[in-house]
Amino acid sequence: MKRKALIASISGTILSKKESNLFKTYKPWGIILFKRNIKNFDQTKKLIKSIKYIFNDKNYPILIDEEGGTVCRLTSLLDNKPYSQNFFGKLYKKNKKLGFSIYDNYIYSLSSVLKKLGININTVPVLDILKKNTHKIIISRTYSSNIKIIKTLGKLCIRSYKKNKIGTVIKHIPGHGSASSDSHKTLPIVRKNQKNLNKSDFKCFKGMKSHFAMTAHILFSHIDSKNSVTHSSNLIKKIIRKQIGFRGILISDDISMKALKYDLVENAKRSLSAGCNLTLYCSGKYHESKRLLKELPLIDSFTIKKTSQFYKFLR
Figure 1 (cartoon, helix red, strand yellow):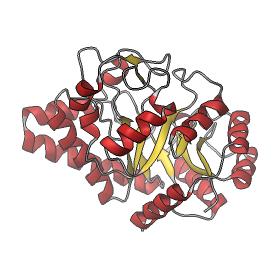
Figure 2 (cartoon, rainbow, N blue to C red):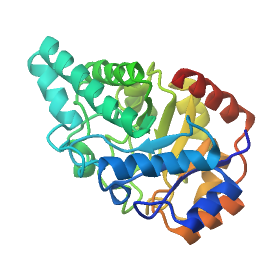
Figure 3 (cartoon, rainbow, N blue to C red):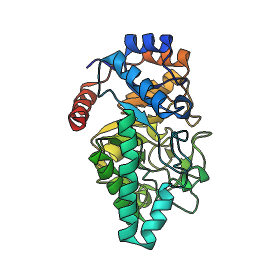
C-alpha cells in the first residue's frame, strides 16, 4: 500500500484534471470534503465515485467533518445545524433514556446518508470537556462539562457509526476544553499541570475505541513548553499513546491553521516526526497540495497495518 502520509482536499464540486493527475501520481492516503465541494446529492455522489475511480478502490478513505451545529458541510443536502453535540448532551442530561435513544437514531440516519454518498469516515465525536474558560469555537461542539456524559455519548457515537460501517475520529486529543483561544487563529496555551489535566481533559479520551484520532493544536506548557501537541513527541508518546492508550491512526488537525508556526510543508513534516501517522490539509489549493504530496513520505508500516484493519471493518 504505497500512499503518502497526507489527507488531501480539493477546490471545487468536481475533480479537476490537474487534481486527478496529481492524485494518480502521488496517491494521498485519503481525501476530505468540505461545503465548497458539495452542491447536491447526485453531484456529491458522482464526485466521490470519480475520486475512488482514480485509485480503483471502492473503500478509498473519503472523510467529512459533519459534527452538526456550527460545523456542517452538508447544508445543501440537509439541515443539521440544530443538532450540535451540546444539544444532545443537554437532552441526555434531562432524560438519559430518551436522550440516548434520540441520539442513536440521529446518528444512524446521518450515517445512512454518508454511506449512500460513499463517505466512510466522519471526524466525530468531539470529546473536549466544557470548562468555564472554553473558547466559543468549541463550546457548542462539546457534549458536556460532565466526563461521564462525554464518555457515554462518545462511545454511543462511535458504536452507532460502526453499525453503518462509518469510521470515526475522536478529537481533539488529548483535549481542547481548557484552551481559551481559537487554534485556527493562534496557538492556545494551557498552563494547568498534568495531575489536573489527567482528571479532566485527558480522561475524556481514555478507553475510546475509534479507528482514528485527531490532535489538538494546543501547547500544554507544563508537559512541553515549546511544542503544540501536534509537534510534540513527548505528548504524543507519553500522553496520547501510553497514558490515554490510543492505538489507532493519529491524524494532525489541519496543518494550515495559524496555531502552527512553520510553513505548510514544515508543519506537516514536524507532525509526522513527532508521531502523527497522517497530516490533514483542508484548504484544497492545488499548488500547496502538490508541494505537500511531493515532499511528504509514504505511510509507515504501522499505518499500513491499521489501514488494512479499517478496510476489513468496511467489508
